[in-house]
Image (cartoon, rainbow, N blue to C red; front, side, top):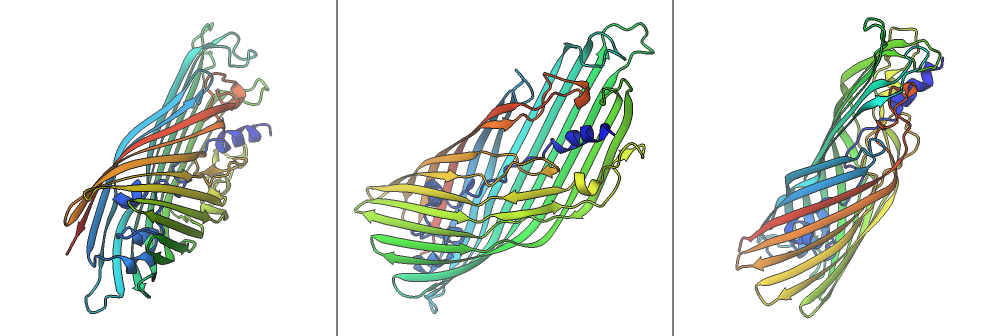
Length: 475
């Protein structure tokens, strides 16, 4: 039947979205955040739990408490994202704790160091909406001659949050070498809601009782929660002016996950096959308590740091492996379409959520300058490559931010006898000049449920963040 490919277009081209396609979006710790994470070699506070547990044994202060908070303003601008002349915008302001952590070392065992951490790894929200209305000839003239009043609306909301908590152990092999291992549990939460409504009402009709009023409604809801664990091993070498660090992170191990996926489509009096015969049907299902999975790849990071008098320069490089295609959520097999018999569409196929991650390589460089005994000025640049791959959309995918991001950070630290206070400003930018439109409300056709074919659009992303951190040294 000709109705089948049209329904597939409807369900398949509307993908879910989240800021989960980058590994270096958030950094941990006040100094490490200012230095863009280029501290794998030279980290000497307890953000080493995250960057290099092997450096724990080289931290001089046996007890340190570090906390940092970021205040971030994100903006996404999609030119013609909902059709020609219909832009999409999202502006969000949020506060996030970057790290809460501490380390311990007993006087009787000075070579052994233990630490704990609570880190925000991802937090991103997006809200976009569009509406178009006008007098257009969108319905088949065989059944609805003349123009119609057209109304099209689109709303999308998405949020992702990930928290990392764990412990690490470091052993000081010698005065210049330390090794360590850490284990971390990650809790990830994702929510997305999509709403589409299109209407076509004849402008002139002989009878209001016989006029063909075509309408399409779609509501989609996705909620995923997942708990996984990873291991990280590292080594740090301190050669006075030169410092070297190396870490290896394991692939994630799924612990527990649950999810809810819902889809509700209603088609009323619409000739989507072009045969002159309007149809009515619904496609609806909602499944709760489904198991969910979320995978992250192995990675290898190398860090270098060199100090000249009062100036330090550093760099870090990290390679992330790929993750083969897998199902994050697999719904039970049910027939979506009612009345039955029009066509068979399985929830197990068309409501599943799948993902593939390509391998990426990120780098960061930093510089730090001491301004006397009380102030330290730092700055950094880092890349943040997307791992998402956009192929044919045959099912729902959780991949919104399909662009690479560049981060620029500068900050100042005020050093006191027992504490450091750090303030920094970060700017991030990214773009994609060849992305499909989210939806097309400017060129509606009846065969596509009163939306138009998807063209190409450009996306611009920018973010400004304020970093405030506090480090306290227990003497």
